[in-house]
Length: 215
Image (cartoon, rainbow, N blue to C red; front, side):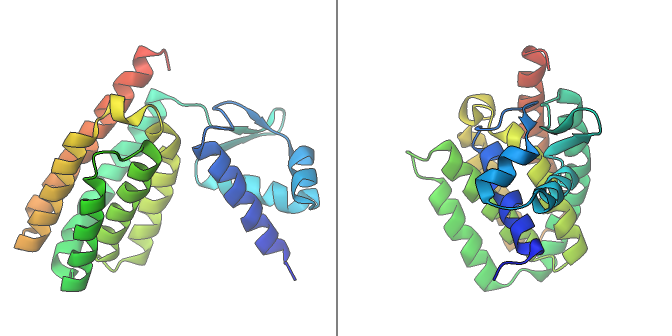
């Protein structure tokens, strides 16, 4: 038996996935009645799913225009990364002090997968998310990790902008390795600084791409 909560979560997950896959485009209206028919639900869990996605920064809610996929904006992305840089640098420094050998091995395995020559954009994004999530989990700071996760969700649509061409895989591989190496050396300052440099480079490439395209 499904509850209103599980119906809301199922709807939010599908809409989120459709946004990430590009089937719902930036600025596109999300029609409540249409989605309710698609799921076979009432409009209530759909409306709650919209609110959840708005809190994640993926949807905008307007009394007149309804729910729409968030527009891609260089200003918005810059703001997201300004906050991400501070939080993730702190998380990386905490992770150094609390990383176990088992966690280090798990993160190394993720990096090996990211090194495959034929990796696709969706595979890279999934592994990149897994790398950072696994690293920051070592910080053992639930509130910090939740804030970072929400910001990463907000940035996800931007990261799907022809990722390989915009920011490149090669630099990302090198930067991820440097972050892990700093952790393994027990150097919290280096882990934080390398994380900052990595995020700044990615942000710079994406922001330049958006501005070039008038966003």
